[in-house]
View 1 (cartoon, rainbow, N blue to C red):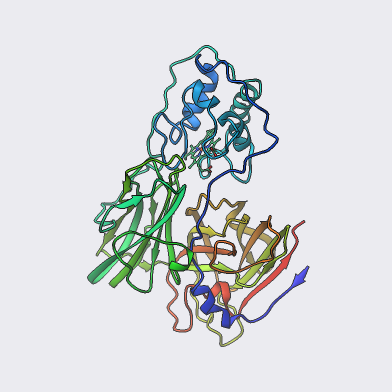
View 2 (view 1 turned 120 degrees about the vertical axis):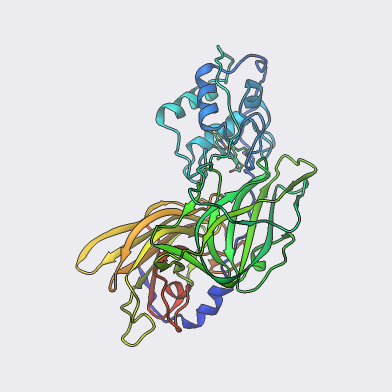
Length: 450
Ligand code: HEC
């Protein structure tokens, strides 16, 4: 184990410049060894058993009209025998077998539950034995927003672009950003946030940030470097519901708030003439709740992932118990109610835990779980962190490249952040939301995981 505890005050500035979303691609690599497929029997019906699993577990995205960036339908027998849109030389049914078994890029994507063993067996047995036609049944798929859990509060703020974003037909992946200004005369609390997905066919995910400065309200193509110092507030990927704050807390809105949206479009099928005005719906109130909520980022800034290796970073931040006289003195006990893990494309696994002095069993704040760059969203949490407790954030990467990879804002760089929503908000001049990931008091170690 390589132990690297050192002060990182100078890195704070880098953190602020670094929280951003890289440009992603969703294409699968063609497998040169794929067998040639004979496709005689594509006129019959899907066997009922198979159609039932596809309709209930895949149909919300891969319906007759594909939705949320899914590149194809999985409804008819012919759909399954078609060449894959993103993998030349391969059939949809071959990719299906891979993706339902994949832990790194599973279908359905998280947070949707994985297939049960039975469901997986039905699809795999049938697809690997030639995917023949069979006796059909009446199962039908519906394209609905799986995020459909509505807000229980009244929406009074709709974050939308000033003009519709044009979704290019010649790019499989496109990131678009826009700003949204909101000025209030009197303090208000944001108590609920829900995604508004306009173009069901091509929106792949949404991220909502607060930014230090105003951004243009018209959508513009953006990447990584366009988003320095952005505080991640909420995210949506298909299957994620609305976020409601606990009854004791609200995100304060005072004076002018600069919101920013980042929308990821997926248009692998090259559909022309598509546009979108996705955003977020917020409930805000002047009936202030007892506490202000806020966001803080844990994780670490300094690491080097060796080429062709699995690598882990483990960082600890002692809550309210730093060196005496330090900025963590006077921190209140806090309750964490949401966790948003963020790494880049080499990220494979992440956990956030609480360590309590005298108790050597860590308590999960966010259970250890696979990380998938394509599916980033808030996980509900409910953990009290008291003075003296330690928050430990662990990130595992798999470096498939020949380069050493370090922290940075580029697509080829990496990150390790957990955005934790909590209350009551820390009020301290020397402390900012990014402090726990990069300050004196954050102790990190790096190692090759067992
Ligand atoms: C919540 C929406 C959603 C659900 C549910 C879902 N998918 Fe997908 N699927 C996607 C998206 C988005 C993509 C494109 C991005 C990617 O490849 O990860 C995709 C891609 C795929 C691909 C790769 C296609 C290619 O050409 O690369 C396969 C195969 C697939 N899905 C199969 C399934 C199966 C089988 C199920 C059900 C067991 C399922 N999916 C459920 C959204 C979904």
